[in-house]
Image (cartoon, rainbow, N blue to C red; front, side, top):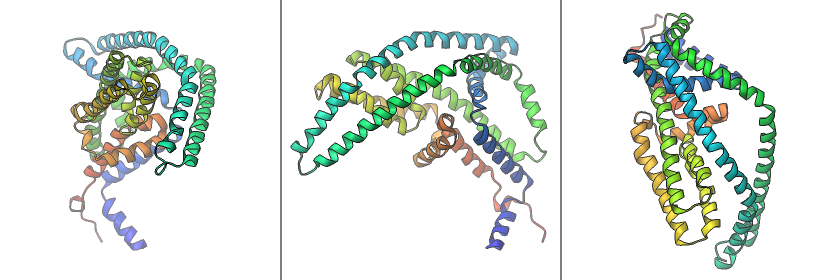
Amino acid sequence: MLEVIKRWYQTRFSDPDAVTLFLLLVACFAVLWLFGDLLAPLLVALVMAYLLEWPVSRLQRAGLSRTLATSLILLLFIALTAMAFLGLIPTLASQGLNLAKESPAMLSHAQDYVRTLPEQYPELINVTLVETIIDNIRQRILTGGEQLVSASLSSLINVVAILIYAILVPLMVFFMLKDKQILMGGLRRFLPRNRTLVNRVWVEMNEQILNYIRGKVIEILIVGVISYMAFAMLGLRYSVLLAVAVGFSVLIPYIGAAAVTVPVAMVALFQWGLTPEFTWLMVVYTVIQVLTGNVLEPILFSEALNLHPVAIIIAVLVFGGLWGFWGVFFAIPLATLVKAVLNAWPKREELPATTK
């Protein structure tokens, strides 16, 4: 057994470039796993820097200096973000509070409907099973409400930290964009000379991460706006709140779309019951989800979607379990990184001959 492991190690790690790539990946994963919470502002700044790099580079090519282009784009981004938040937050808060007040009535209505199912389908549905499901749902809702209250109290305590991040993150984004080449040169000084594979993987992943972040933001905006227009035209209550939820559900591949379907269907069912309006809403919502998965995502993420759906779901579960929200957000790029590393890893015939 030891001889097999030794032979495998000599085969796969005889190339110094491969060893450098492996050690660098292990170090990065360990730092993120151990200090992920502390590095959250840095991760936010990196995402924003990737998002704003494209317009900054376009202005720079048009003749503006890097500093001026960065200042203009960052100020415009902050202004648009502030306007969006100031416009959405009051509506979201109002609709969220109203939905929370009506949740007990919705739950009671759903319970009454579910209790009629054993009478309609006695050979398929058991009364005991229905009562058990209802008790579990009620318990989960109560637990979720307690967690929401505790999260709200903790968020009030962390207001100072949020204000500090609101100042630090834009500053980090500014200097990341303005001094990009200087920072990249400083990082290269700490890397060993044997980094051919590292450079190859970095060139591939840098472009893919840039396209992924930009495409994901565009997808959230398009899906959210289209969902709001559909919900508002059909007269669905809490249309803004549900549209925002549908928009952000695209952050979690496959699982997000299934999870956000539940509140949309429950609100529509409570508002209209089993009527043609409810049917039309679910048809329109299904069309939006189908077009998102089969038209919009292939256009925005043509390279990333070379991954198999099973690989994407596994990546969401694994990286989400390790790093929470950021693991879910970067699940596809991280899965693409694993694929790029495996493709770039030297094959047996490419490895230098080992001396016996």
